Length: 260
Picture 1: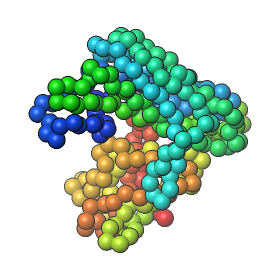
Picture 2 (picture 1 turned 180 degrees about the vertical axis):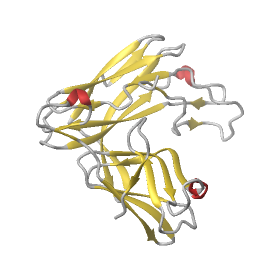
Picture 3 (picture 1 turned 45 degrees about the horizontal axis):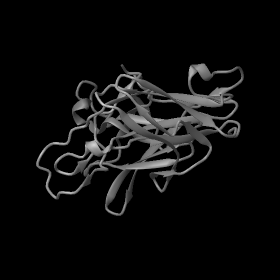
Picture 4 (picture 1 turned 30 degrees about the horizontal axis):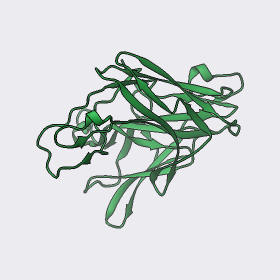
Protein backbone atom coordinates (compact mmCIF):
# COMPACT_ATOMS: atom_id res chain seq x y z
CA UNK A 1 0.00 0.00 0.00
CA UNK A 2 3.00 2.31 0.27
CA UNK A 3 2.86 2.76 -3.50
CA UNK A 4 -0.52 4.45 -3.24
CA UNK A 5 -1.90 7.50 -1.55
CA UNK A 6 -5.29 7.62 0.09
CA UNK A 7 -5.98 11.23 0.93
CA UNK A 8 -8.31 11.46 3.90
CA UNK A 9 -7.94 15.13 4.76
CA UNK A 10 -10.18 17.92 3.57
CA UNK A 11 -8.36 20.94 2.17
CA UNK A 12 -9.17 24.32 3.65
CA UNK A 13 -11.01 25.42 0.55
CA UNK A 14 -14.58 25.04 1.85
CA UNK A 15 -17.16 27.73 1.19
CA UNK A 16 -19.62 28.11 4.06
CA UNK A 17 -22.95 29.89 3.58
CA UNK A 18 -23.70 29.54 7.28
CA UNK A 19 -21.47 31.08 9.98
CA UNK A 20 -21.93 28.02 12.17
CA UNK A 21 -21.41 24.39 11.18
CA UNK A 22 -24.01 22.30 12.99
CA UNK A 23 -23.16 18.93 11.45
CA UNK A 24 -19.87 17.27 10.45
CA UNK A 25 -18.68 17.53 6.86
CA UNK A 26 -18.78 14.26 4.94
CA UNK A 27 -16.63 13.49 1.92
CA UNK A 28 -18.62 11.38 -0.53
CA UNK A 29 -15.59 10.18 -2.48
CA UNK A 30 -12.16 8.77 -1.83
CA UNK A 31 -9.40 8.77 -4.40
CA UNK A 32 -6.32 6.60 -4.62
CA UNK A 33 -3.34 8.14 -6.39
CA UNK A 34 -0.15 6.37 -7.41
CA UNK A 35 2.80 6.55 -7.68
CA UNK A 36 3.43 8.89 -4.79
CA UNK A 37 6.64 10.24 -6.30
CA UNK A 38 6.25 10.37 -10.09
CA UNK A 39 9.27 11.31 -12.18
CA UNK A 40 10.01 11.97 -15.83
CA UNK A 41 13.45 10.50 -16.27
CA UNK A 42 16.00 11.77 -18.80
CA UNK A 43 15.25 10.68 -22.34
CA UNK A 44 11.57 10.13 -21.65
CA UNK A 45 8.83 12.37 -22.95
CA UNK A 46 6.18 11.64 -20.35
CA UNK A 47 5.36 10.24 -16.94
CA UNK A 48 2.15 8.65 -15.72
CA UNK A 49 -0.21 9.00 -12.78
CA UNK A 50 -3.13 6.75 -11.88
CA UNK A 51 -6.31 7.96 -10.20
CA UNK A 52 -8.83 5.50 -8.79
CA UNK A 53 -12.25 6.24 -7.34
CA UNK A 54 -12.83 3.92 -4.39
CA UNK A 55 -15.89 5.83 -3.20
CA UNK A 56 -19.56 5.21 -3.89
CA UNK A 57 -20.28 8.16 -6.16
CA UNK A 58 -18.72 9.50 -9.36
CA UNK A 59 -15.97 12.07 -8.83
CA UNK A 60 -14.97 14.87 -11.20
CA UNK A 61 -11.34 15.96 -10.94
CA UNK A 62 -9.21 18.74 -12.38
CA UNK A 63 -5.51 17.94 -12.87
CA UNK A 64 -2.98 20.76 -13.04
CA UNK A 65 0.81 20.89 -13.02
CA UNK A 66 2.47 23.96 -11.51
CA UNK A 67 6.10 25.04 -11.63
CA UNK A 68 7.65 24.70 -8.18
CA UNK A 69 10.42 26.98 -7.02
CA UNK A 70 11.71 28.15 -3.66
CA UNK A 71 12.16 31.86 -2.99
CA UNK A 72 12.92 33.66 0.24
CA UNK A 73 12.85 30.39 2.20
CA UNK A 74 9.37 29.41 1.06
CA UNK A 75 7.73 27.36 -1.68
CA UNK A 76 6.37 29.18 -4.72
CA UNK A 77 4.01 27.73 -7.33
CA UNK A 78 3.38 29.27 -10.74
CA UNK A 79 1.55 28.45 -13.95
CA UNK A 80 3.72 26.74 -16.56
CA UNK A 81 3.48 25.09 -19.97
CA UNK A 82 6.49 22.78 -19.93
CA UNK A 83 4.46 19.81 -18.65
CA UNK A 84 0.90 19.17 -19.80
CA UNK A 85 -1.50 16.78 -18.08
CA UNK A 86 -3.82 14.68 -20.25
CA UNK A 87 -6.67 14.73 -19.51
CA UNK A 88 -6.91 18.04 -17.63
CA UNK A 89 -10.40 17.07 -16.38
CA UNK A 90 -11.93 13.68 -15.79
CA UNK A 91 -15.00 12.10 -14.22
CA UNK A 92 -14.32 8.69 -12.68
CA UNK A 93 -17.11 6.27 -11.87
CA UNK A 94 -17.02 4.30 -8.59
CA UNK A 95 -14.50 1.47 -8.77
CA UNK A 96 -12.90 2.79 -11.98
CA UNK A 97 -9.38 4.11 -12.73
CA UNK A 98 -8.05 6.92 -14.89
CA UNK A 99 -4.57 7.13 -16.40
CA UNK A 100 -3.12 10.65 -16.53
CA UNK A 101 -0.18 11.34 -18.83
CA UNK A 102 2.29 14.04 -17.81
CA UNK A 103 3.94 15.09 -21.07
CA UNK A 104 7.03 17.24 -21.54
CA UNK A 105 6.58 19.79 -24.31
CA UNK A 106 10.31 20.54 -24.61
CA UNK A 107 13.52 18.84 -23.45
CA UNK A 108 15.18 19.96 -20.24
CA UNK A 109 18.70 21.28 -20.01
CA UNK A 110 21.34 18.57 -19.58
CA UNK A 111 22.06 17.68 -15.96
CA UNK A 112 19.03 19.60 -14.68
CA UNK A 113 16.38 18.56 -12.16
CA UNK A 114 13.14 20.54 -12.45
CA UNK A 115 10.46 20.49 -9.76
CA UNK A 116 6.71 20.65 -10.25
CA UNK A 117 3.58 20.17 -8.16
CA UNK A 118 0.64 18.12 -9.38
CA UNK A 119 -2.66 19.42 -8.02
CA UNK A 120 -5.71 17.19 -8.29
CA UNK A 121 -8.84 19.11 -7.29
CA UNK A 122 -12.25 17.62 -6.82
CA UNK A 123 -14.98 19.61 -8.54
CA UNK A 124 -17.95 19.50 -6.14
CA UNK A 125 -21.33 18.59 -7.58
CA UNK A 126 -24.44 20.51 -6.55
CA UNK A 127 -25.48 17.46 -4.52
CA UNK A 128 -22.35 17.81 -2.36
CA UNK A 129 -23.86 20.86 -0.65
CA UNK A 130 -25.78 19.67 2.39
CA UNK A 131 -28.58 21.32 4.30
CA UNK A 132 -26.06 23.65 5.96
CA UNK A 133 -24.91 24.97 2.57
CA UNK A 134 -21.47 23.35 2.94
CA UNK A 135 -19.55 22.60 -0.24
CA UNK A 136 -16.48 20.46 0.28
CA UNK A 137 -13.57 20.39 -2.13
CA UNK A 138 -10.83 17.81 -1.83
CA UNK A 139 -7.31 18.68 -2.94
CA UNK A 140 -4.51 16.21 -3.58
CA UNK A 141 -0.96 17.50 -4.02
CA UNK A 142 2.05 15.47 -5.19
CA UNK A 143 5.61 16.38 -6.15
CA UNK A 144 6.82 15.73 -9.67
CA UNK A 145 10.47 15.86 -10.74
CA UNK A 146 11.81 15.82 -14.29
CA UNK A 147 15.41 15.28 -15.42
CA UNK A 148 17.63 16.41 -18.27
CA UNK A 149 20.17 14.23 -20.04
CA UNK A 150 23.01 12.93 -17.87
CA UNK A 151 20.94 12.83 -14.66
CA UNK A 152 18.64 10.19 -13.26
CA UNK A 153 16.74 9.66 -10.00
CA UNK A 154 15.22 6.19 -9.98
CA UNK A 155 16.84 2.97 -11.10
CA UNK A 156 14.57 2.71 -14.15
CA UNK A 157 16.08 5.98 -15.35
CA UNK A 158 19.69 4.87 -14.95
CA UNK A 159 21.79 5.00 -18.11
CA UNK A 160 25.47 4.46 -18.74
CA UNK A 161 27.58 7.52 -18.01
CA UNK A 162 24.82 9.40 -16.18
CA UNK A 163 24.88 10.32 -12.50
CA UNK A 164 22.15 10.03 -9.94
CA UNK A 165 20.49 13.24 -8.80
CA UNK A 166 21.33 13.56 -5.10
CA UNK A 167 21.18 16.32 -2.51
CA UNK A 168 24.24 17.69 -0.72
CA UNK A 169 23.00 19.24 2.49
CA UNK A 170 24.44 21.42 5.21
CA UNK A 171 22.70 23.28 7.99
CA UNK A 172 23.03 25.87 10.73
CA UNK A 173 21.03 27.57 13.46
CA UNK A 174 20.41 31.21 12.68
CA UNK A 175 18.45 34.05 14.22
CA UNK A 176 16.21 36.43 12.28
CA UNK A 177 14.49 39.02 14.42
CA UNK A 178 13.37 37.26 17.57
CA UNK A 179 13.06 33.84 15.92
CA UNK A 180 15.66 31.09 15.76
CA UNK A 181 15.63 28.96 12.62
CA UNK A 182 17.07 25.70 11.44
CA UNK A 183 18.42 26.60 7.99
CA UNK A 184 19.24 23.88 5.46
CA UNK A 185 21.17 24.48 2.23
CA UNK A 186 21.21 22.07 -0.72
CA UNK A 187 24.21 22.38 -3.02
CA UNK A 188 23.58 19.03 -4.71
CA UNK A 189 22.07 18.00 -8.03
CA UNK A 190 18.78 16.65 -6.66
CA UNK A 191 16.08 17.55 -4.16
CA UNK A 192 16.06 16.57 -0.50
CA UNK A 193 12.93 15.32 1.25
CA UNK A 194 13.29 15.91 4.98
CA UNK A 195 11.30 13.82 7.42
CA UNK A 196 11.77 12.47 10.96
CA UNK A 197 13.80 15.57 11.72
CA UNK A 198 15.43 15.88 15.16
CA UNK A 199 18.06 17.98 16.85
CA UNK A 200 20.24 15.57 18.79
CA UNK A 201 22.83 16.10 21.48
CA UNK A 202 25.69 13.73 20.72
CA UNK A 203 27.59 14.91 23.79
CA UNK A 204 25.27 12.86 25.94
CA UNK A 205 26.15 9.23 26.80
CA UNK A 206 24.86 6.86 24.16
CA UNK A 207 22.24 5.30 26.43
CA UNK A 208 20.70 8.58 27.56
CA UNK A 209 21.16 11.16 24.80
CA UNK A 210 17.76 10.37 23.24
CA UNK A 211 16.06 11.88 26.29
CA UNK A 212 17.63 15.20 25.37
CA UNK A 213 16.73 15.13 21.67
CA UNK A 214 14.29 17.68 20.25
CA UNK A 215 11.77 16.51 17.68
CA UNK A 216 11.25 19.06 14.91
CA UNK A 217 9.00 16.98 12.65
CA UNK A 218 8.05 13.33 13.28
CA UNK A 219 6.66 13.15 9.72
CA UNK A 220 7.44 15.16 6.59
CA UNK A 221 9.00 18.56 7.28
CA UNK A 222 9.50 19.71 3.69
CA UNK A 223 11.74 19.75 0.64
CA UNK A 224 14.93 21.60 -0.25
CA UNK A 225 15.35 21.90 -4.01
CA UNK A 226 18.80 21.90 -5.67
CA UNK A 227 20.69 25.15 -5.20
CA UNK A 228 18.17 26.41 -2.65
CA UNK A 229 18.10 27.17 1.06
CA UNK A 230 15.08 26.64 3.31
CA UNK A 231 14.52 27.39 6.96
CA UNK A 232 12.10 26.29 9.65
CA UNK A 233 11.58 27.73 13.16
CA UNK A 234 12.84 25.70 16.11
CA UNK A 235 11.45 25.68 19.65
CA UNK A 236 12.54 28.31 22.13
CA UNK A 237 15.63 27.46 24.14
CA UNK A 238 17.38 25.42 21.44
CA UNK A 239 21.09 26.13 21.80
CA UNK A 240 23.97 25.61 19.40
CA UNK A 241 26.01 22.46 19.73
CA UNK A 242 23.28 20.11 18.57
CA UNK A 243 23.33 18.00 15.43
CA UNK A 244 20.60 17.77 12.82
CA UNK A 245 19.31 14.29 12.05
CA UNK A 246 16.83 13.59 9.25
CA UNK A 247 15.53 10.86 7.00
CA UNK A 248 16.23 11.68 3.34
CA UNK A 249 14.82 8.59 1.62
CA UNK A 250 11.65 6.63 2.34
CA UNK A 251 12.41 3.54 4.44
CA UNK A 252 16.05 4.64 4.83
CA UNK A 253 17.65 5.22 8.26
CA UNK A 254 18.06 8.85 9.41
CA UNK A 255 21.42 10.50 8.80
CA UNK A 256 23.33 13.36 10.43
CA UNK A 257 23.67 16.49 8.32
CA UNK A 258 26.99 18.36 8.38
CA UNK A 259 27.06 21.90 9.72
CA UNK A 260 27.71 24.94 7.54
